[in-house]
Length: 253
Image 1 (cartoon, one colour):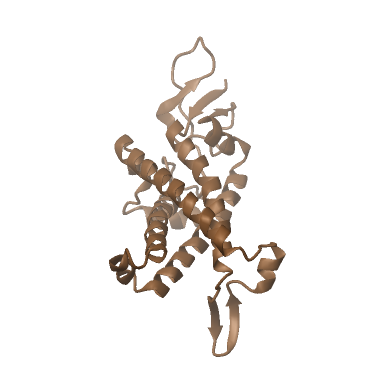
Image 2: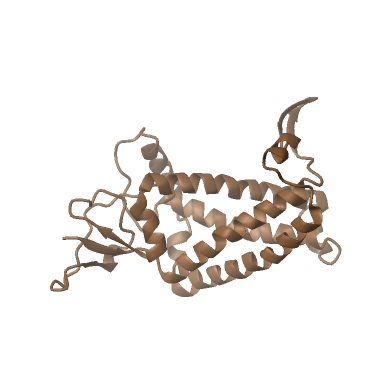
């Protein structure tokens, strides 16, 4: 018998899907701003190992030199990003969802186990919980990065009005570098996150849209459920909750 597994509350799905296009526009408009002055690179002596970013990168993406337009888009969407983030943090605190997101003393050990399992270096599946250690660390870090992006963004947006904040972050140049580093972190997380979603399969993606996942008979080994206490059978004549037998879950699905 098929089972319906409830995974993500409506609020979590709403905040997730609002944040996705907002972050895309923020990063894109940030590139428009950054091209006006892009000094960051990694070099040894006079030899440049990595440049963020060479002119060829901007030309390949056909990013025009439109600083004013980039700033306009960035400053509008930063308010949506900030408001959405505040509601998300508030919801996790009020609903108690923060308990699933804050790493505990076992999270780092679990994260290592999950990583080794995903790389095929460990055969034993780590124990199943709402979010495994790798997920807790990643999602909590993203929350902190969001706060850091807002703080550093204001420090470089209003360095005079928020001079105390800019000074606290090490000055204007340091705050700008910190803001840039956090943006790179968001991009890296995005690629890892999408890769894990693809690895988890269509049903995992569907659950972030609908809030639930339909688990077929014999599919208990697939990464399906995150809340076994919220499982109900699809058969209307059977009201007995059905347990999930040893579900598994990828690192960052």
